[in-house]
Image 1 (cartoon, chains in turn purple, brown):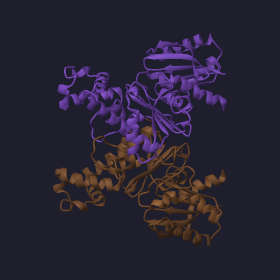
Image 2 (cartoon, rainbow over the protein chains, first blue to last red):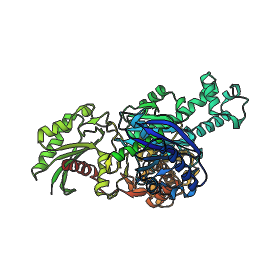
Image 3 (tube, chains in turn blue, red):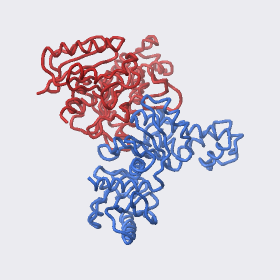
Image 4 (cartoon, one colour):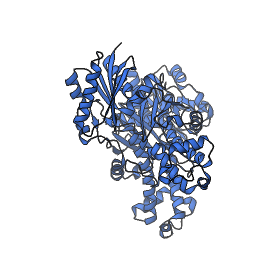
Length: 312
Length: 312
C-alpha cells in the first residue's frame, strides 16, 4: 500500500495531507496562501516536511487554482487570486529536485473530477463531467477514463459556456452571460437581486425588508424550502440557468453522468433536474449525481493522477 | 496502396466511390435515398457492386446521417429524414456477411471532422473541432487524435449548445435557442426575417420590397458585400451568433483549431471571427479555418477511420 502527499493550493488557503490507500490519513495541515510565490512554496515545503516526519511517501501531488499544462509541471496563464509569477514557476522541476520523488501538479477542478471518476460519485463510468458550483463555476471532464486537457491544458472551462446573446450580465472573464455568471453562488445572488426589482412577489416575500445588498442565496434557499413565493421563483430561475448549461454539456459529451460539487451542490433537486435534462437533450440519458469524493477531492484526485502515472 | 469503398447516406441522396490513397478515384455514383431501409440497403449494394467491378477493395465504410454507436455497427435513436427501422438495422453484420470485408459505419459529421483532421484543414493537429454550417449545425470533435463519441456514440451535438435563456427561438430538437437555431442557414434566415420587422434600416434596404418569406441568406450576403446597411446589420448579427457558439466550444475544449464546413463556410470572415474569439476566451488562442477536405469529406473520413481500424 503506497503513501503519497496531497497538497491543495487555493486562493485563500493551502492544505496538505498524507493519502494512504486513496483516503486522507491523519490530519490535514492548513496554512494561509501568501501573496508571493516564494512564500507559497515555503508554506508547501513546510507542510510536506511535517508530513514526511510521519511516514515514507512515494510521491507528491498538488491540486492548484489555475490551468495546468499538459506536462503537469506548471500553471499556464493568469490565475485570479494567485501572484503573477505563479505561472512562470516550474513546480515539477523545483519539487523533483528538492524531494527526489515523482511529482505532479494539476488544476484543482480537474483533479476533483478525476477523484469523482476514480473513487467518487462517477466511479465505474468512463465518461463523466464534474461541475463545481461555488463562488464561480468550474469543472473537469473525463473522456474514456482520461482528463480532457486540450492543446495546452486549459480545457474544461465549463463556467465559460455562453448562455445568452445580448450583453445582459457581465462575467468575471470580461464577456457577458457565461454559465458562471448565472449558475454560481455569485450569479444566483445577482439573479435574486434582479428579481427583487422586477417580481411583484418580492413585496409580500419574507425577504421584503432585506436590503438589496444583503439578499443572499442562503436566505432564498431557506425561503424556498418554507414555500415563500418570491424565493421559489428566484430558486427556480437559478435552477433553469443550471439546467441550460447542463443541457449543452450533455449534448456535446453524451456522458454517463454529470456530477455536481461545490457549495451549491447540496441545493440541487437532482431527480427533477435530471428528468428535465433527459427530456430536452438530443443525446442519450444521463445521470445527475451529487459529488461524494469529499472536501479534499482536489488533493485526492491529484494523488490518483500521480498514482496512475507512476504505475505506467 | 489499399483501395476502399466509401459510401455517404444522406437524407436525400446516397453517394459512393472508390477511395484510393485517401482520395476519390474515378466517378462518384449517386442514387436517391428511398423511404424504407431495405431499399436504402438495396441502393447501397448496387453502388458497391458497380464499384467492385472496377477494382479490388480492402473494406467498405459508410458515413450516414444519425448518431452511430461506439461499435460502429448501427445508428442509434431517430435520424430525422431516415426511416424508423433504420436505427434497428445492424449494418456491420449485414455488410460483413454479404461482402466478407472489414466494414464500418460512422456519423457523417463525425466522419467529415475526422477527414479534416487526417487530410484536411486540421491536418497535423491533435485537438480539432469541425463545425458544419448548413441547413442545420453539426459537428465532430477530435481529442488527442480520436473522435469524441461519448458513452453511446451520440456526442458532438454541437448544434444543440444552448445560446439563450428565455424561450425566444424554437429549435428543431424541441427546445429553444440552440446554436443551430441561430447559426445554421435556417437560423440565419430567421434572424433576417425578425430583423426586417424591427430594424428601421430595412425600409431603405435593397431588400425593402422583398416578401417576408422570400428574404434569403443569399440576398443578405450579396447586400452585405455591396455595403447595404440592413444586410450588414443582419450579417453581423448572424456572425455574432456564430461567435458566441464558437467561444463556448473553445472554452470547453482548448482546441488547436476550429474548422468550418458546410454551405455557409464560404461566408465566414475567418480573420475577424478568429480575432474576436481569441480576445474573448479564457483558454489559449485557436485558429479558425475553412474546411478543405472537399465535398466528400464524409465518405473519406469514414474510410480513414476504417483504415485506422484495419491497421491496428
